[in-house]
Amino acid sequence: MKICLITAFPPSRRGLNEYGYHIACELQRDPLISLTVLGDEIGGSEPELPDFDVVRCWGFNTAATPARLLAAIRDCNPDVVWFNLLFSTFGDRPLPAFSGLAIPLLTRLFGYYTHVTLHHLMDNVNLKDAGVRAPRLYRLAGSLATRMLLGANSISVLLPAYRRTLMEKYRGQNVHFRAHGILSGRPEYPDFSRRGNPEHRILAFGKWGTYKRLELLMEAFEAVASAVSNCRLIVAGSDHPMTAGYVGEIARQYRGNSRIVFTGYVPEDEIPQLFSTATMLVMPYSSATGSSGVAHLACEYGVPIISADIADFREMADDEGIAIDFYQVGHAGSLAGKIIDLLHSPERQVQMGEQNFSAALRMTMPQIIRSYLRSFTLHQKARAIEPISRFRRIPGWVPSRSTIFRAAAPRWVPWN
Image (cartoon, rainbow, N blue to C red):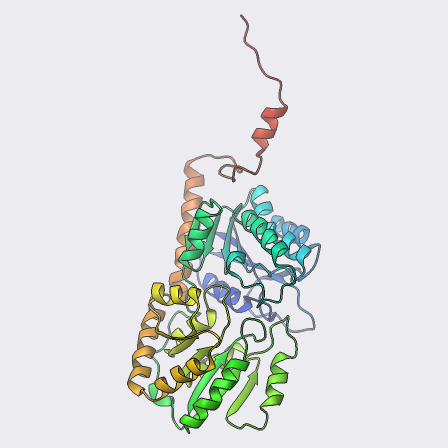
């Protein structure tokens, strides 16, 4: 099977590049798969990762992206075109972002089997937290973009509620729920002796400045530090692209506090050390944009999680069996109380860590990718035994060639 994977891809640092990388790694391990990554253009002269066939053929906020991607897809002539998408994958300006989201439908209209893994829905995004100035217009554009994405042959979302929304509100078909999964095939049982020895490391990890903010966490940590002497706050990750300079400003405010460490961007090979020594992960969010990749990293390393009480995260925890202690959104005292309670309970730390590691074993990347490949293989077999038009089952609002030709053809009238 020949697959084109369209995603942001390292050494790019744009959204979902890590997830795209781990999809590609797993596909590369299958000897029956021929993989071409159609990745985003990167500045500078950083070398490509070895052992991957990467074609850099589209740019962020570039008007020519649809034409260039379609040309690259035709050159590859794949069996499956797989999109790994956020609504902002192709741009943070309205026109390139919107036109980029039309590419899956256009790809299908060119006759290729097209699948979309969609990491969030515009319906569930808090536009105020995202810094959007015209929320009504964005909601309308998001609704139209969602309908375009449903023009793909099939689509996967990472929360059951998103599947319900697409099927009930948008009348979507061939919509699947698939877990985000952990970014590993063989997670190792956590070594709890590395935690709290000699200090408890409270980890916050992400791209900061929009719905992931640090002010509340800093306020809460003052109370935590007063109650627990051997703890340190580790703030890992860099600015969100829309909030340049945010982490640096927070770091300057607390540069005299030796118990708060800012690591900046964390390379892939340093993530195991960061998570395996953390006593807990804290997610100080004001809203969410889907299933949390950071929470799944914590599961991979058996780390307990404390999170804002957000509906998406509640559903993720219930559906995947993840151990999360929830605090009241926006309430520093509630967050501090949850952190202190967990620091004072070594038994609870181990119990939550083991539960999260157990959840990780049920959703390893090989298991997730096998689910996708089974679906792709079934489609191939169906096409082999049942000759069908390349436009069959496209949503009713997309006119097919046969409909256009029937409308244009003269009506045949039998002889009397």
